[in-house]
Image (cartoon, rainbow, N blue to C red; front, side):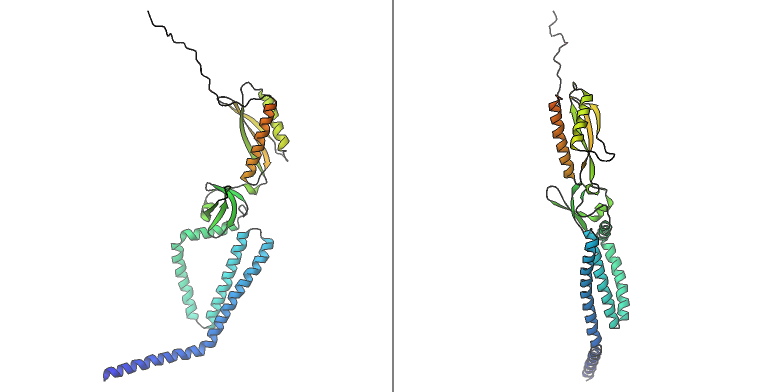
Length: 293
């Protein structure tokens, strides 16, 4: 009998609780629907603001990565504002406080667990606003060389001259030095060569400078520099340094190719020899091969 009474009392308590919850749901239903409506409006508003910012920045900002990051951050901020306003409509101040406190704890835990990922993310933000590195530039870094095709919050994508893509983490770019060919329109090309020991060195120097100057005109205070560097095994070696239009490594290769062809033509025309590596063998024998008597 007592057990039946306790069961009946428990069922009544459960039903009373369910009824109170239902009453609260009915009373708060307008606020609940309004909160959902506000949040949905802010989601669409974030999308619209993102599109608007993308168009405005597309006309003024050349760097695609800056535009992408700005749009993503702006959309996230608008959605967060809508989320907090929705909680305020539901009169969930305690829940809001708990969410903020929990977000802090969770954020700390995630930050410790994802140090490498966050490092790449912050490095990506730095690279996006770095004028020395932009999409379309030809760079050399971390033993790779190629054209930058993408900069995002995790990595940059480099298209190499062999048409293959290399994905490099942002932190590697920030921490390691990189060479950017596209930041300057002119580059100095260095070409090494050698002439035979019987050559007229003054004539070699004059002809080389004249040939290079003809095909690669100097600008401003630029000049063609020629210097003999050493007495080699089979030739007297020199280096010639000149300026050429170059924004990528391929341009330097083309300039060096033209210079080699034209210098060879000039040397052949004037009888200047570019010797093969040679080795002189002395067959003289100072030993007495006769047997002693």
